[in-house]
Image 1 (cartoon, rainbow, N blue to C red):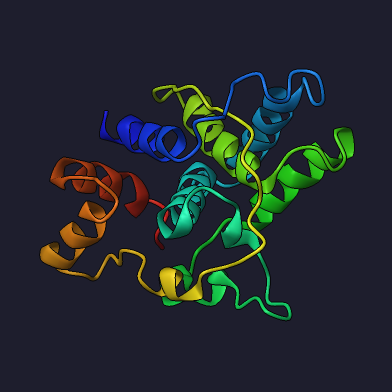
Image 2: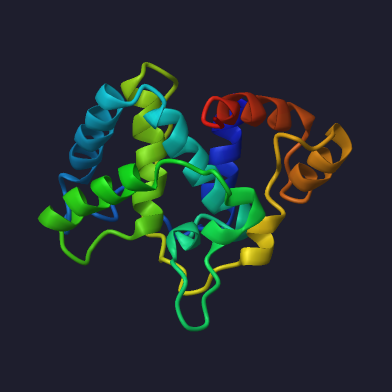
Length: 188
């Protein structure tokens, strides 16, 4: 339940204009495309689902669910992927494959932020976990926050610093325990 609460908090609070029907006309097969790619990834890597959830978590935790974690180094952009909290993050190739499949059918339509959100949900669904609604319409960030990525929760931190990081996002100790357990499977 804490995972669902966290995802609802991240999606609902800062994106009041989001809707489930955002891509119904412009990319109606989006959920099926993402689901197929997630299934394909899980068939070859049992940890693919956990990697996708962790990737989405890292995106949302830094500056909201805006796809900024996917921005690469460029003039004026110091990629979040270079941040201490993202060292060792895995799954970029899975996200790239999903985004390529979406772009093949719906070029220039679906934001990377929405792809990350839907991929995380589908990775849980495909493996028989709980489901939740994904609201769409996020815009991709044009900025990255490397400093924020440096401050991502670490599996090596003690309880107090972790609690402070979660409380800063309006999450409590129950959320911390639930989310830490869900993401630890993607760590190694």
